[in-house]
Image (tube, rainbow, N blue to C red; front, side, top):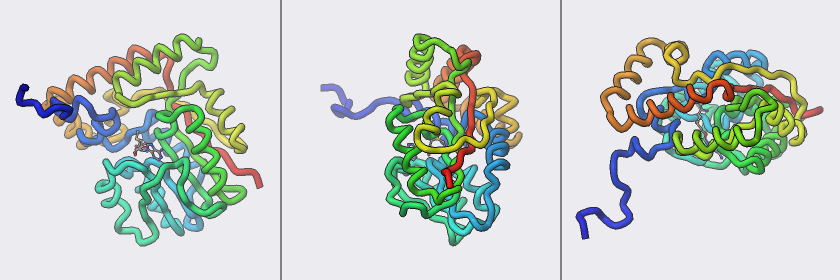
Length: 268
Ligand SMILES: C[S@@+](CC[C@H](N)C(=O)[O-])C[C@H]1O[C@@H](n2cnc3c(N)ncnc32)[C@H](O)[C@@H]1O
């Protein structure tokens, strides 16, 4: 028997990490496809305020949590089943006594019905199956008070008439490269799903999928964090290979990928 322990994974962690955790490990904070520009547009429309009880699904390292907490809402609850970024999120939310994090799935939060006024989830539905996307949307409807807003920011296929074969091909390429079962929908399909869950669509916004393009990286992260991220990636051969492969897949499929966001409302 070789010195390898049977069943133990070999090679650096950077080869195995899901794409978003790899980028976070390298120092990237904005892990959603439409960047901060799209987050700002969606949050301007949803207008979080001090009277809000806010839930955020899949907050990652807490970049949007910072913005949501800056309005000093009545409460803020982060819902994430994974602990990878719990420490980074804790650093963001711990100065705010009304903020907490619960370890739970967005499809089954355990939160009381009609207990919150704003739900935000970015880049967390795309990785769910279609039935789980709908479960998360229905859970949002359940926990929101009538009139409450739900914001999503996800990866989409474009144009709406893109062929099923092309969707299949790009989904497979994405899943292989980012090591997450990525299942984007067309913008029209995202809208249909939100409506079928019971929401009224108030606002839709699209942006190019430019997560790893230098101009977007600088805009999202700021020059200093961008430089640190770039240096971390360049210094680490396994990360360099993975991030390079991700960039290639995003670039190769840029005509069929975009970011889409919606602000929807629970009917009164
Ligand atoms: C791509 S990262 C996006 C992080 C952050 N929202 C952002 O846009 O920068 C996906 C996030 O969703 C979380 N997540 C994955 N599945 C989830 C689920 N079923 N419920 C809630 N969060 C989930 C992950 O742990 C991670 O924090």
